[in-house]
Length: 556
Ligand code: NOJ
Ligand code: CA
Image (tube, rainbow, N blue to C red; front, top):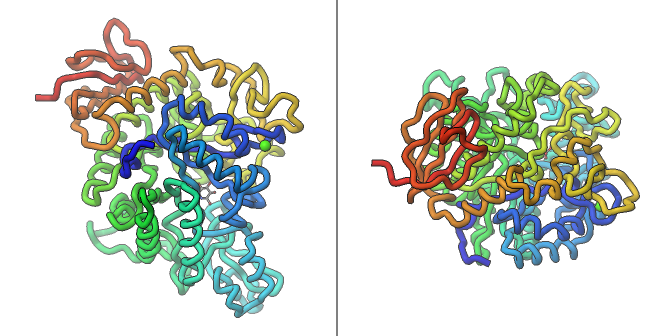
């Protein structure tokens, strides 16, 4: 392997969502055998690392983010021995491996939670979670007013009358991170995977672990947005369960563990916070290495908005010397081809916004054109970048999944008001003219766990491979250039003068990216050669919704 201990500063990391990547045994669900068979595809795509969403034993109430045992593999996916072989095989192909760690909560089937239920009120076993008596005369009301991120109350009552906290689904009880046993357990889990060779971990819901021990009610004034502070720089009262200062101690301890390995392992945070200053606190030199840039993902297809998001990102990361990351999609959000084809191209988790966006008209050709330009943007900004499986094929959100096929608790807990995330989790199309599109082997016993649209016949790996106009070949070419191009990856950038609606920046040495988001075509800045264009130029001019990579002289 390349001996670069700071690989995470420049890496392009491909997210494999194991249920939906490739099915080796024909039960309609992706698995480790399927992934192993497709590793050469990922090597040929040209990514540096693979992040696996959870593959641990789980009742799958939240597609595996309800972990029953962090030290094993769910039989649906395979065995621990197979996972270790997969890690070794990936390494032999120069692909680094990142596994998902879910510290905020576990599954209700986790041994500790089952012990806590059995042990009853007041027991040490219950101290590992947040069990409380209810309010009201007979304890019939939840202990406080917190609501679940998936909708409904954040508390569920058990048979002896106590309630337990779950910020997500009831099948995902929150750990009590004030308890040292929880800390020791997760430190041991980190070592377990680091000892098996994984190069880093992605940390789920990383800003939620610590809670206000008083479990005080959420107050209407509790907020995480900087705009709500009357005075800039004024201290915001700590939120009862999001971004509490005590979280940082957890990650300092994790960093010491990651650094004790040779080479050091990388820590990547899933942190959704509206306040970029608070966000980068998690990236101080003794904490996490990087975190997903959701501001970039949420930004609309608009040059001014993206310009200011990029500026804010880079300005916030500089003081902590952490690399920025650039993310367009993941398993929790609308696929960006569909998002970019709509009138409203932004993303938020707000249930109402998601409801309005779902089924809103989306122009697939326009979304595709913008997605092609967007990937040249994200792969040329300074830092590391993420690719969510299937975006390299140009897949759109699947919006017509029948309700009886849906699986996401977000859909059920909001009574369908929020369509949930199944539409971005549909199994990948690999080959052929009809479902399962090579996702499962011939003669598979079951269809893919979510139905694939027929229109995907044009978007299979087989259909796109070798077609110079395909999304797949654009990604492959962009990643090939990025690997060879000293200007790309970690580093700095300089904005170049550009007309309204256009982003143009220089990366040293000798590289420029120009993205035209305006409605008119524009002339290109002086350049030596065109390295790559997301769509053909027209009479030497850069059309609307097109990006180009150029070999240029440094700006004067
Ligand atoms: C974030 C994960 O990405 C999402 O899929 C999951 O539902 C929640 N955390 C809860 O684990
Ligand atoms: Ca399978």
